[in-house]
Image 1 (cartoon, rainbow, N blue to C red):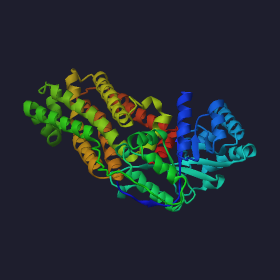
Image 2: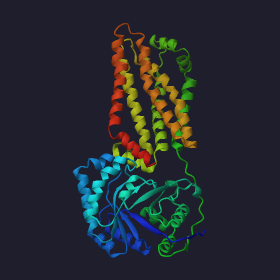
Image 3: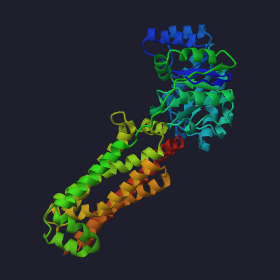
Image 4: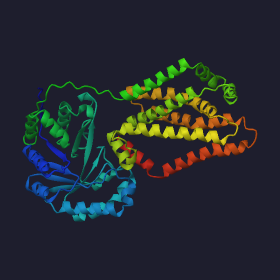
Length: 484
């Protein structure tokens, strides 16, 4: 066991109230025995739990359950939001144990309009609630909205496998409580918490912990209870921790394995199909002659092209996954899927992004192939469209390989975004290139074909872009990025 002397501080709990009353009472008893003085709640307890909270020496931080609000959330509040805030303010005001009220968690606080829309709401709350007001954030840096609140709770997602790599509380936010949230690879270790706590103690900062983590640590290390009890009651004490070898988690291993499988499939396809080997070179070096071979049905095999399309659909999933893993933190993912819950599949954010890219690319591929097949009378067989549409998509093999290498070895969000746009451009232009190639063999109504294929295709994409950019989607993305 290693020891470290730590100055006085306070450890509180962000309490997720159990549905079982007996379990809730048991946890409150444990908190009391640990000399916990601060408890944050985001759900209204029943009368029995309120009675215990009011009778014990707890200071309750009552959070209104408003998560990831945008500017429009408060500028155009619906009746349900107004009633929700009013109900929580009324209940929290009636209990002497509640010393602070939290209005929202992880909002668009960097927007100037967010500050102005909150002012009338905060003024009304202060008329009814005499305690302090706060909000929860992922960034300790000061923003304009801070002037309207007494303090803010900053959630720190501690990651990395080395204590030296941890993100500790910022020295500029002396009175800011911090919520300690270890990432999955550090969840079972105490040394990162000791490092975090030592830094917080120097600044006299209250540190909140999640009860699930706290009880897991108490089960694993029963002596940890004495550590917390002493920390909450004495000026200085020794923080003993076990000798821990923190293991680095292997991230993105499944994506790397999938990429290797895709390249393996490419190697098999290249080795077993002489037509594919020749086509791969001829498409880029002798494009006109390749198109003639396809349209004159000299190239009849469509198996290799189907394999390429399957590979590209998988690569689309990897592309979206790679962008998400670099651009979004855990809180960023939560913000994204809070506003778009139907995108969250199987409860896994990374898998959800992969499947979103996969499904979107699959639908787009099917629509493009069918569209080209039925809109051009010079195309007599589906294999002609498949061979022409699939070949330019092989550029994406190289793009996604570079993206995966960057994700696993370096944090280069700017380069990854550029490569992601290049991937999208390649996918977008494959339809246009195939349409131009097949149009050479139209004997009449060529401009009508251009209008119904390339023209309509571009109009649909522009319309989709305008629809996305004029809605709340860019605002949600900005919020998710600001939380990362």
